[in-house]
Length: 447
View: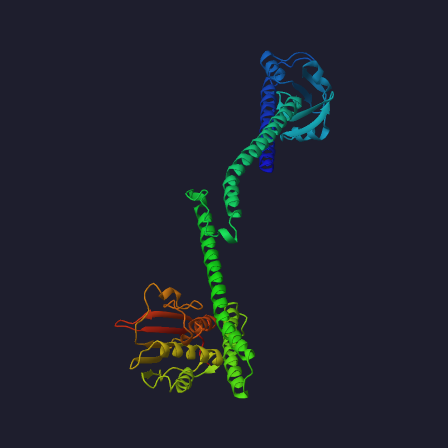
């Protein structure tokens, strides 16, 4: 603002100086012409004597000096008498004798003066030149006063702007400080708190809304993490408790080699269960963090489905299996190992929750340059309130945990693999009972 005011003031000073200079020049021209007309009369005043009254009044206005000179520069008349000593510029005199006005700026008697030379032709006589001059002291004084006034304007304007900006910034920052103060109170144990300061103020509604939505996501993430920790502890405690009990029983009395083998095999099953749990948790965590590098290659997903179904011949013996393959679907660029795990987990989930004599339907269909895989099974279906949670770790609609329904990570792993491929997975209830899981893999076709 100070620079802007200074630039504006400089422009005003420059413009004012130009106007004042032009006004002075116009006045000198008028003085020279009028005086020349007077001096062109039949009677010529003697040198150093007063000119006629009209010419004298014009000459005395504003410290002006008028001199009438002949072609050689000799003073014929002067007003006031001191004007006879005005400095003569021979070049300007010669220019004026040609009929062209000449301007000069000189110093005289300690003052800066502005001078015009103009020709005045006397009737019946030779050429004469009127030299009219005026002091530039009043203009310079006015310029100094203007500079001081504009300097004061710049200073006061800058101070006023500073004060106004300080007040405006304070009023603008104060709500942010209050919002920040409330935000700093939110910690890991108080994520349920929300920011209420200036939530209804139009200028800060967006900021407060973003912060509150972020807190909601953090609260959800912390809740999910705590629930996951609890579930993992529960899932690990079960096999560890069983393993400890079997070892304690084995150590209580002497056992036959066959008994020890049976106990060791049972213990090994519990160890395998814990290894499977940790591997699946690690897969989900690394997939969500994108730490798994996909080995994409042209893959026939139908072949993966047939291979997975072949491994389920025993469990699906008492169920109706329907397979609808997309015959026109080209191979797609996916990680075959991970997609095989996705298919296996969806089929395993369908087998577990399909009653005896129920129906399992597996279908593939082209989806642009990718593929759509759907697995549908008959049964009780999924309650609407449970649909948003079916892909969460260890989620079971029936909260009574049983070991024969698996670890509760199958659908979580499937969802993580789908997201890792840039795809989506959805769960829905089938009208009439049952559930449907649909995976869209929008991956580029193999070349």
